[in-house]
Length: 507
Image 1 (cartoon, rainbow, N blue to C red):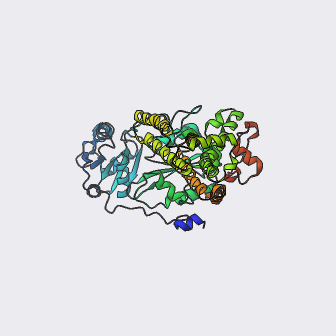
Image 2 (cartoon, one colour):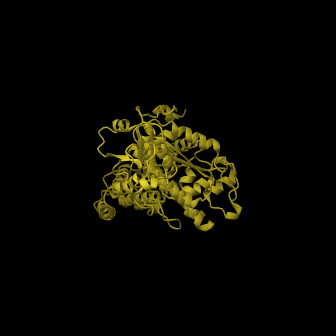
Image 3 (tube, rainbow, N blue to C red):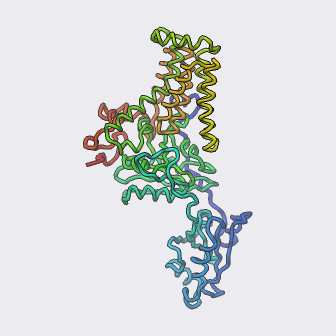
């Protein structure tokens, strides 16, 4: 167990079989009413099937999850029509007709337990209950998605598809299937959450993804024991190998094309009903610095942009701390002319270099948070006012030096090149920690902090795959493949660390 896990007393969480609550009671009209006691949106309609008063059933549905027009047109009208069901029949014959398409619904399921019938009601189905037989039939009549498929918000698409995931898991899986129109794309569905009963889908390419990876992910998801699964952290902290680590261990994306590309590489995806994101495992640091446009651009341009992201990664975490270390302890490292300029700009500033950098970093984070939380027009105005007016006024008032503003601004802009918002948040925390390390020990403290960071990244694993893979294993060719985008004629195999069954990626 690593030092961080010992500090937080956390490791891979123990997995116990998930306790799936079961409703007690008989599958009949009174049983459903008892299960939904106090739910005024539960509607029930007694029906005489085929117009025969001897063949009685009761139709239940939740108002708002289905429309009354659909219930009337596709269920009540055909089931009560004596010409459709023929002459008055017994319940058994009516049930056989329903099983063979008497209702105008393409999705029909036979239910024998109260729990299954209640789950169907809460997922947009109408349930027809036959009390004496303790049998029910559920008909899917759910309302269409309230939000249409639109362009991705946080992951901008430059040369890729313009569709994005929404909150409906079935539409999300359909978006992926449009990208990968193959029966090898498998989808396994389960229900998580004692109270929320959230639908979770596991997607992978059979023959490509490692079966052990699929089984391990399925085991961890089935072991989640919680009241609800309504946030991304609720899934990530239960599935990740090291939940105590601040670094993200699941790849989040709102783009179906990125989701499909990772499935082709041998990863396994997770879609959660109610969350407009797809999750992918295993996660590695180089994967967080990739974007789908790398496959769309030429290999020279894509390689240059990838290297630029890695350079920006080091700039955003090291530059403020490096400036503090050099300005406080190692002034001899600054060229003479630049040193004279720095001294001249700091003569009238009453604060030390560390206080300047710390204050500017905090102000930068405040402006970023304000821009995110406020409405878009107001947020843009606040960002412009904060960056131009407040920053310029602070320099003119001799509160901060111009070089401090340049250092913090350059580090902040470099952080925005990170494609992953989750990794970007961790980099901001790391940047702040490096500033304190530079204050404590100068360059020595900065290098010690960098060594601790590198040690932590090397100790991380995601479903058995090293977090720095393929930079730390696979040789020079694998490392070059992570840092550069090789020409397609030279890039014919999938990543070895994923243990894919089909290593060959392209012809």
